[in-house]
Length: 420
Image 1: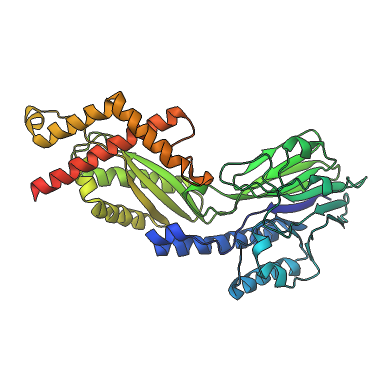
Image 2: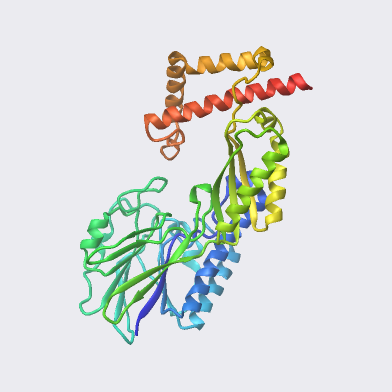
């Protein structure tokens, strides 16, 4: 009889959502609760599939957490698994190491929380014995590989290693217990249940299957897309099959809406509606949070910039009518077309805009602008230095867009003043 378990990591219960809360407190509360509901979905999956175990590869919590509400919530969900006879195997990640709750909660004997020394737990099944090997770290920093601390595989059993690691490194993630996928494959285990990197990655190999399940619920636009957990089936012959299962309750998505050649406000609203309808129909999660970016060249660009608050209200109304759809943020990348008539060309505002565009194309100006951006980037923390791109070509594209947007914003303000 097959042995089955669900593999998850990086739930980050009660993660602070400061930037989202500044823009929209209601959305911040929705996403904050979504992390809890995603964990409920994981427990539901365990119960529905009647699995043998749940593996949590670190960071159930988000940090220095003292909420007793969270403690009760976790205890309730673990209790559901305990009553169903489902084991839990959990290691502490770098965020768990800061959590007070993680050290104070008392769990039933069906829960194994691995300590600071490698531990192996035998799980006997009707088919083949499965051994879970785990190791937690007691501090938020782990600069060295933990792999040498794991034991060799137990002969005659299927061996599952549970590790919280940044692997060889990943953008946006701290270095934590680094090791290579090749090293994991060469170790004697059959499956590696990893955690720490929030993007799902699967590394199949001839000896071992290595899985980073990704975060089960995105917390901001940089964690966009469907999120999931991994259902693992170990056959009687020791074969391993994995399935990705949806867990995200609220899904962040980027949505680009082309406004090229729009001349009426109603056309803009219609295009936004159509794009949101299509997005909603393609998203399986209960909620979708869209970052809408309006692009293209439109004579309405100055009005859209001036009346951005009205446009946001229109977009939010459309989203509300669709149900389960939210506007996370509205970005205006739309630009003004060049003067198209003699009257336009004679307009002093158009003349000024044309002059600014001409200056923006000059190599002397662009060199000065590049130098300013590079100086600014160098003064930022390491994790924020990619905002203008990762290459010189990216920097030039960023500069083009920034200049076009700046010229349009100046033009919009001048037009608004002229029409008032």
